Each structure stands twice: as structure tokens, then as C-alpha cells.
Length: 312
Image (cartoon, rainbow, N blue to C red; front, side, top):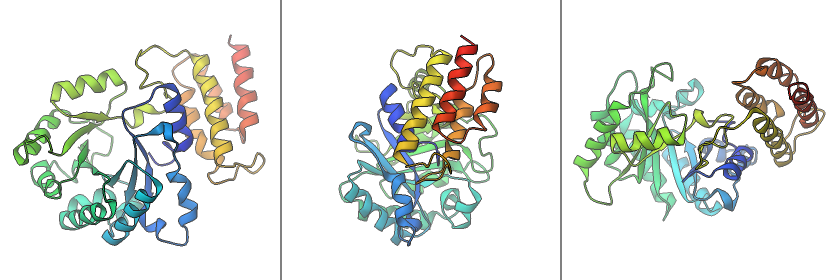
């Protein structure tokens, strides 16, 4: 969820319907240890309203994950998550993300060093059911050896990316592996992930498969109301008003220049959100085409307001 669940979008989510736990975008521990550190620090901004909030890092270097964990403590995060599931080629080329599924010994060293730097903070892992095939029975016990606080399991292999339906039937198997390793109240928690589009669906899956919770990723796109308890239908006008508000949050927070579109994050980052907000209603395609040409908050507001007047 890089360049999606940033501080601006999380503010929108908390405002409209707060989840039980919030994660940051994943941040490179290598980058935080480099001269480019200051450029990455905005990825770790958060407000008190977002608590409990977990900092997510990735790296193939245990010593740098130790340093990132110290930083997370210093910044006041409530937990640390290690990404061992990202299929991005650039991340994998470093030996990080999903590549760690193929290197369990290094994965364990990374977890243990992160725990050493985390102090009292819980450390969790987000990963997949395997790399080329389902290897839960081999991979999961390796992670459990490190006594991580929680494992979020994207119920697809790295090879499958997100091109097939998530294998939710394997959540039950994963829980059985965890409970066979440790059946006490102090055992590692298991969160499922994949294809959940509503909070109700997530609760149903957690109950059906006997797991501790569900992480929702792509389902939150364009839908900061996802965790709202009422589960009401949000009308297009409210969606578009929120889209404008989100754009204002983003531009102010990241100091985006109105002419160049440059700032701590580029204005173009917002355009993936416009595709999600302007979706699923009559005339949405026409509006999306116009929004893709927008270069600043003012243009987004004008385009959207004009569209609403024409279609009211």
C-alpha cells in the first residue's frame, strides 16, 4: 500500500470510521539508514487519533532493521511490522519482501534483530502462504520460532500476486499450525488478508475460520468509510466531497506546490485515489478522465464541483 495509506489518507480513515489497528506505508530500513533518511521521514508521520498505529519496515539487513526498530520506539509507535510479502521486483532484488520466504534463516535473523531494537513494542510479520507454491507447513513454523506477536497472512503465493482469489480455506490450516506450536493465551495472533471489501465480510471470515482478525488493504481504496459501524451506503456526492477534502489534507501536509505539483510527496500520487473515489456511478468515467488532467487542489475542486452541478 505504498503511496496509499499515507498520513493524509489515514486522517480521512480515522475521521470517517476508525479501524482497530492502523499500519503505515512500508518504509525502507536501508533508506532510513542512508543520507536520504529525511525524505522518508514523512512516511512515518502520524497523529494521536490514529493509535494504535504500527510502523511497517522492509529490509534484508538485520542490523538496519534493528536501527529502524529503535527509531520506531523513539517516534512513539505502538508496534512494528516487518514486510515479508511484497512482490515488488525492486524490493525482492534487495532480498527483502517476499524474497525472504525463500530465505527463512535470514528472515529469522531479521525478526530477532527487530525485536532487540523494539524494546517493549510488539513485533509482527506480514507475509504470504509461500513463494511459488503453498509452503505454510514449512514457512509458518520458522516464523513461530521467533515468537512474533502476530502474523498477517496474505492468502496467496508470491507467484499468484493478486491474480487469483485468496485461499481463505488455508486460514484454518494456518491457525492449526500456530495452535499446535503454542496453544496458550500468549500465542502468536493470526490475521488473514486478501479480497475483503467490507468490515462485515472481514468479521464473518474471522469467525468462520477461527482467526484473530483480518487486515484490509485494497478494499480501503476510495472508501474511508469502510470501518464505519453502520455500514451505510455512501452516495456519490459524499464520496466526491471527501475526495476534495482528502486532496486538501494531502497538499497541505506534504507542502505540494500549486504550480509544479512537487512537495514532500508529488501531487500525482493522489491520482490513484481519484480512480477509486470516482467509480461505480453514472458519469464516473467522464469525471475520472478530467481528474487525471488536474494538477492541483484548485483544479480538482473546480472539476468536481462543476461535475456535481451538472449531475445533480
